[in-house]
Length: 270
Length: 257
Image (tube, rainbow over all chains, first blue to last red; front, side):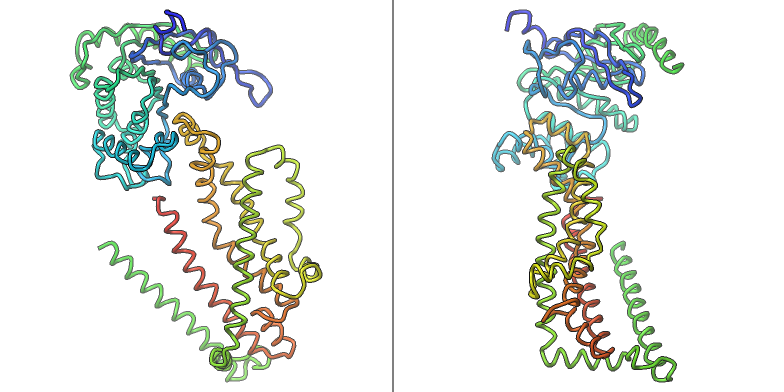
């Protein structure tokens, strides 16, 4: 590992991805995407629907192999599933047959932590996300927002340096969503062992700006690429309920929307 | 409030169920008494009840019942073990599944009655020929449900546990097996019914014990009361066992909304 490698937590080097379609032709989802994320940074990726945002994240997770190009995690080339990252999905990914406590502790179970310690740590996390009384409930007995909190605890309990998030709050109503965004930032900012590196995919520009240090805009598919990168220089900690009306926020929104708007229109035309 | 309303509803349903049964028996009894139906062909409820009472009092019923239940249970266990293993193996290796697909379909299409004499020849008149017949019925239900359950496992759940650090073995244990089990439990009622059908048909075609044997003996002497009495026992047993299985299923799948 050389000096420059340790500067990035996650690096995509001219990554392209082609999928074979059922009619035998090939669909290019991503074309020559390069991206470097410094450790402890929170970056958002926005783009119109169908622009390959999820594919990008799946490649970073090691769940999908790029057709060409390379992924580096803390300088090391990624060959299989990304063991330095966890992934929060858009859909519910809790195991429906395990109760809340067992779901939170799942990552610990998988690496062989004994039951006593596992449950104690899970209960700590449940208290942190405000679900202490729901430890023995099953996911089907919780609301959408509560399930997302369980998923956050599940992702946070194993101490991985990178967190990949694929529109995690898009299925929630707008108020619950704002609350979850605040809780996410609170968890991230008070990271016990240094801040996690977060890559947050969303189609909502407002959410992207409100949360991130940097917003990356992808072009409309097929063959999406990075067309803009903007630093978000808003102070932290951020008050998400006030932030959206501040002049700085509105300026950023305007300049990014100018780029994104054309791509959204393009994606709707095709 | 809700639970008392639910239990009230259960009572109403139960009352109606009893009323329907009693009504049907009364109509039957009346038609035979009036001479509309010939007692030789359809017997009559009061005779059947008397017959059952003799069986119970004389103790002959329990031995036959125990044999049938033993065969059914063995058939269920062996059939489930084989069906689940094969279902799992096929679901995990698509090539094997593709190769064997037509053979599985062919075997499943064979009417089991045709197999019964073969099994008698191979496994003798004892319980094992009946167990074998049960197995051929239970196997396919379990096989198809396991196969489907594993194939149907949610992609997102699989990706999530892999990201959380699961090895292949842990993936099987924490996602694929539980996912398949929900299908398997849901088919437990069907499997159990099939297990009993297999056992009884086997006994009917050649045995020295069991409910199927009792029914076939009665039929051999045109003793319709005995046939109906045997059928009644079989029906009652299925209802009782089903109720037990329903409870088990509710408990095992308690995490479902």
